Image 1 (cartoon, helix red, strand yellow):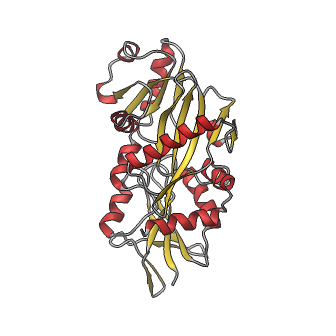
Image 2 (cartoon, one colour):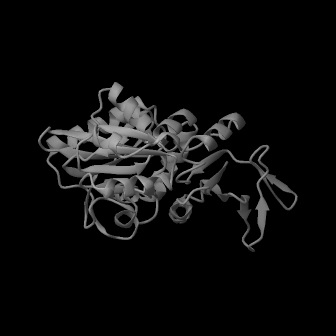
Image 3 (cartoon, rainbow, N blue to C red):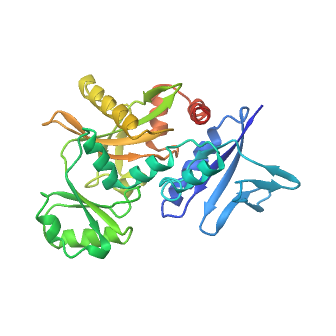
Length: 327
């Protein structure tokens, strides 16, 4: 019997635009012979399912159901496709947990921790995972950029502590007014700002998921950007070169894969996760940048690139993710 799956997209943040692009790819590649798929749009104005004729049905949040005509439709699982809140920060996961609806992403606690970049760094450090030195700033307690200058060495990255897609992120090369402006920019996106030291090296990113109890790593991607760093424009507007699979020595690839598996296990991840690294040649080790628990799924996104490089179709991949949600 077919499973009924809710493809959850939209969201409450500026990343909703990316979520809709991801949802198009996922919807086009889910195996319709195995699953009945309903796209659920979660917006600040409400939660809706749009019928073929364009009319919208409101989701009953009491049990996450919709009623089409005289037929009530409930869902066996949720296929998570929301970047940002409430689909990547643990809020929606907690809601589904209370309703006992399986879903294809990390659990509520893992999602909440990894959505907060500083908390992610703290857990990683305790677990022996290499990360950059950093300082967390709070908007209601921030005095001046001097508190950063005295603790870290330039160049620095300044980014909103919660969120993704590199929105509000800047690279600062010196201690001039540039730093203050970068902090203000990040505070426009979040009440917490993370400032971290730049690590020189190759930027590598790798998808990781679990299948039949085994942690599987996808072929990694090297990112070479024409921008000063892998910012929003580089990620989504084509201003970067993404080489999949990355042309790296096996000694390097092995270290990145091992680090990725350790991070996936340490954070008790579920579903597909993309982990970003800088491989520092001097140290001969990968440094973790961040953990993306709902990575982009548009046709041009990194995970679909890596799935194809592994020799899988996206249909096979999404089938594996959905089936794993029931384990």
